[in-house]
Image (tube, rainbow, N blue to C red; front, side, top):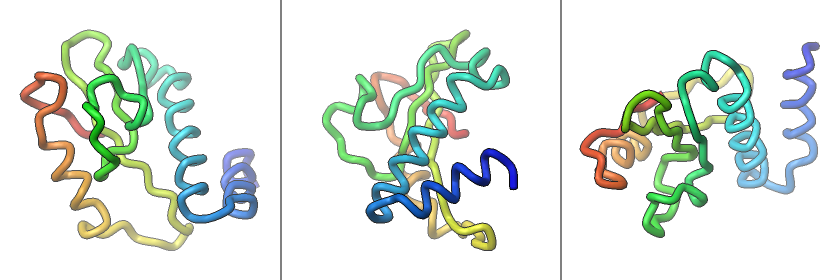
Length: 114
């Protein structure tokens, strides 16, 4: 078992509930985007949605993370899914993400999705 698989299994076993498991996975994804050079070279900042300065008090409606493009004025919306190994993500699982990510935030006319 890889270190990542061990960590994910640890999250599954120690999470108090599904929300706690999802929060842990969001923080892991944020850490990955900030530290893996494929993404850290692309993004200047990554926020969990409720810490994003431009969320204007909106509750989480599908966007879990927002990443600021380093070389442009754009933002990238990220939705994190922490399902079982054999689970398939269907369109219905991500509809609220697409709806939320298409809405205008912080004066930007577009929000890219990752």
